[in-house]
Image (cartoon, rainbow, N blue to C red):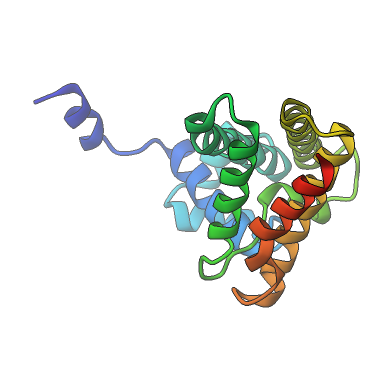
Length: 195
């Protein structure tokens, strides 16, 4: 038996089940709508198990955002890496990946944006983690715009971020038949106008 087969045979740790269930429920329904009781019941664990791993539901929400952040950047790198050295292709590939994601049934936009909207308190751990993601997102888009040779890379990076954030929101409203279907075309027009 291989090591990976042994690992697959082991039951998942309670904290891993909690994180997985929280991620699914928080994304689909919103963090505030989901109670601790539902999380522990769905995960098949006890409340003490949850509170051993997370001091509070707020800390679990922050962990969800940190996990989402790690997955987000892994996906960003996976989509853009094949186009290294070609910032236009990197941007277009990223926009295409977002447009494709909006076509998934019951798409709920960006978990980071959703958490920031749910938690207006600027000191809430979930909001802080969301803001950090968006600041890095802005930095990267501005960097790609600069590498592209845009006349005003900060403006182009910010405009791309506004376009993307609008896509996240509108895709939830139009259920696969809205403005999000034109993200790639709009991004191309925006880039062309900025060069």
